[in-house]
Length: 126
Image (cartoon, rainbow, N blue to C red):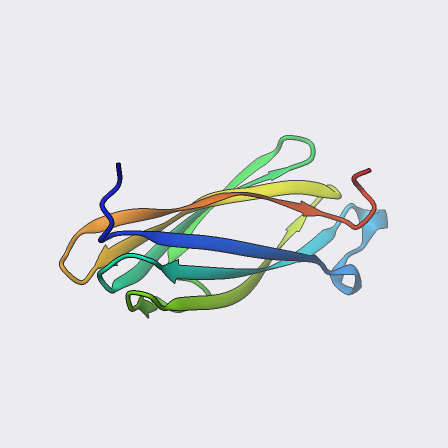
């Protein structure tokens, strides 16, 4: 069982960006808004991210980097941090998943898991 002091929940809302997509060129743009909620007992800083993006053809791209959208937010216990970002795929449907690497104020490092979520052009799935 995981330690209740180090609990971070991640939720994601996605949106297809028709105005930035070019379907005739297999370019499908998506935005996603992520809420990182510290449901643990200790403040924690989001140090880095690791995304695994899989398109509808099974092509996998991994993205690693510091922070999120140029920030390394310190999230107090009971508080949340929300940000928006985006990705472009060559298929109408795909998914993303990954993790955030966190550093609690007491020096403990831990991962916040980002469960798989779907990116899909409206109407692409029946």
